[in-house]
Amino acid sequence: MNNHPQRSLFFNVDWLMVLLYLALCTIGWFNIHAAVFDEAHPSILDMDTNYGKQFIFIISALVLGLVIILLDSRFFVALAPGFYVATVLLLLVVLVVGRNVGGNQAWIPIGSFRLQPSEFAKFTTCLLLARYLSSTNIKVTEFKSFLTSAAIIGLPMLLIMLQPDTGSTLVFCSLIFVLYREGISPYFLIGIAVFIVLFIAALLVNQLYLILGLVAVALVVMYLLRRYRQLILVTLGGLVLCVAFIFSVNFIYNNILKEHQKSRIDELLGIKSDLRGAGYNVNQSKIAIGSGKLWGKGYLQGTQTKYSFVPAQSTDFIFCTVGEEWGFAGAVVVTGLYLFLLMRIIMVAERQRAPFTRIYGYGVASVIFFHVVINIGMTIGLVPVIGIPLPFISYGGSSLWSFTALLFILIKLDSSRMGFLAQ
Image (tube, rainbow, N blue to C red; front, side, top):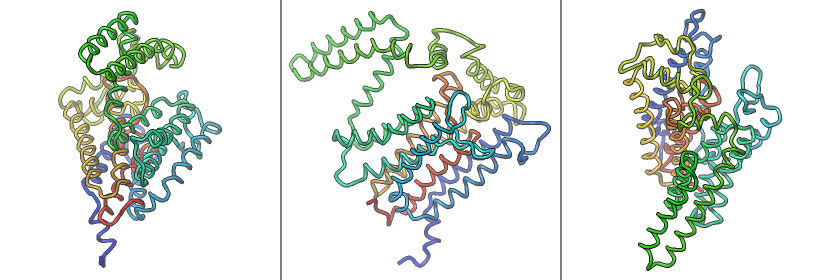
């Protein structure tokens, strides 16, 4: 019998994850100070500035993390459906009363503060998905279970797309890795990768040549598998599906994607070059990161940063401040911290006795991984600009609180792993 429950509670906390979290938040705060530094308000604690406000966000996030640690683990299992429904309702509310910023109606104004429900939908979706997949007799390999899982992920995606916020919508696609960990075929992931490659290829190569190439590959495969009739039929079906998808690319590109999305894809693939328009942000970001060289220009010494050449530098493009002022070495430290955190999350997920915690842990890793790869990728020109924050580092209360809740719920569930069993 444990005579010191509170002492045991905090001793079981994975302090390594907490330290990594604190390190990233601190790095974010100082880089926000550098990104929007105002000589009229030099103090990093000046509450009239974004860096002063970020300090308040960090303190409140720490309070949120502490509250989560003090709650009973079963609270998150029991209320997972309630949290999910609450965020779905907020996503509906934002479509009616939300404030439009940058073309997205994604924020609910609350006085001088703006709440972004799509950020909170990430951890509530992970919770409900973990609750469902950890239920008795649920196997994601069964069509009904897979369809239900897809619906849990798809509903917030649909509502966020209506805002429209493409970046936040795509984040939910990362949860496919959770389904993969729970048993769906790796061919499903391979199929998604193939369609992404085909989409890019259809924009760069004449469709007729692309189809002829696929037919040639399919004929070779069918010849090699000529003794296996079923595999030949699968190959034929795959060929038909790929050809149909190639023909649909032009329709998707011209009728579904918005002009700014098409411009960003064109810029990324080199179809067009507009350094004063669609390519301006990324070009300035690459200049900022490259100018930092190995050790950087020093804290508050970044010229690209100081003269505001890069838009949204304290939010979506915060990484270019790291690159300019702290150089390649600083960028390696930041990416290394993320890599270490992701490895730790996966290790924590794999050591769980409760399926709920394991599944939720993979959800946490998937969401953070997607944010980090896409955000850093877009600042260095490897992926299109889709406007998502860098976890724990970008400016913003909604983002920081949602990532804090996402991570600290896992920390809490892990701290109770010896006695907690998901129902």
